[in-house]
Amino acid sequence: MQGQLWVELVGDLVMARIRGEPTAALLQECQEKVLFLVQDAERGKVLCDALEMEPPPVDVPLAQRQLDEGLGAIKLKRAIVVPNSRLAYLARLAFGEGDYRVFYNDIVAAVKWLNDEPVRS
Image (cartoon, rainbow, N blue to C red):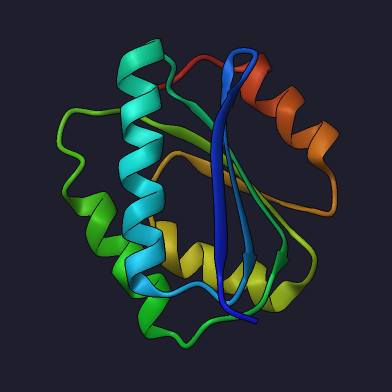
C-alpha cells in the first residue's frame, strides 16, 4: 500500500500519522508540515503514529536522518508509536541521537511522556 500522511495539531501536540509504506518524498512532506505547525503554533512536541505503517526499505529511514540533520536550532521532542520491533528498529535508525522515545502500541504512554517532560534545549 502506498504511503499516506496526516499531520495536524491536537491540543498541545503536533500529530503525524503515516499509513502504508512511506517514501523519502513522503517523509520530507511530513517534516515540512510538522515544522510549519511547530513554528506556527510554537509547539515542539510531536507524536508520530506509525501503527499502520509498513516497513520501508532502509534508505527511507536514512532519508529521515538527513532531514533531521538540517533542523539546526529547532528542537523537537518526538514520541514514535510503532506496532512491532522491526518498525522500532527503523525508527531508531531514522531518528538517531535526537530527543525521542519509541513506544510499542501505546499512544497513551507516548502522550504522557511528551507532556511530562519539557522540550530539551
